[in-house]
Length: 320
Image (cartoon, rainbow, N blue to C red; front, side):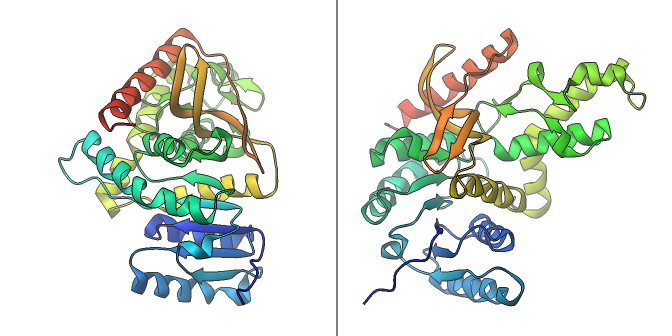
């Protein structure tokens, strides 16, 4: 007789560095009672599960399983980090083609065993693969989201906080659009301590507001290029995204109605339709309760449309 699942239950498909860091963040934060980890490299997977399990004396109780697709049954969330990495010189479209074909193979398996779970897509290009998951699975749009610009936004808030000399939790600002080179900063609604950031810079005695425009541009470029710089130095990025995924999962498990910049299906936002991009969205036990069609200025609208046009081209070329 199969043992009944513990709940909350989160399954991870693809347990390389990102999947493993995510599992570690789940354990430390005590978000779930059961974690099922699925990976093609069974030997490494078993080693990771053994290593993670040895945290038991110092954490809340959690059952960690090195499993297969049938073990993901009744998961509250299935988090998908599986996918091929971009090779040197490889185009974005080539990578998208490879990973869409991979998703065509395993999304039906996930759907077979966990048809009612919330699917959280992390694999890159995340917006394309979130859309692919939506199309292949046939699930309702609210039950499929991508990690989107949650990590980009965290980097943005960290750098703004550093510049302003405040705690990052006192900075409210978003990176939206594509998780990639066409993403953009929403300066028009960036707030520090209840004050629009440009006003804050004028008010603060610690900031030379005369050079703030250049600093803001430098901060955005640092956010946009962070992944490249980290990968150049250590080969991959995983800690930041691991904790970002834990935060999204916590919002779902606890039915928080938390607003996060996840990748969602866009429907008639400044004329953009039928593409996955990041907008601030209310996240709860149902997945995405609502994507917020926030007001953007003209430059931001143009940037959003640029992101959409770029992804629409890729979607057509990969046959979705």
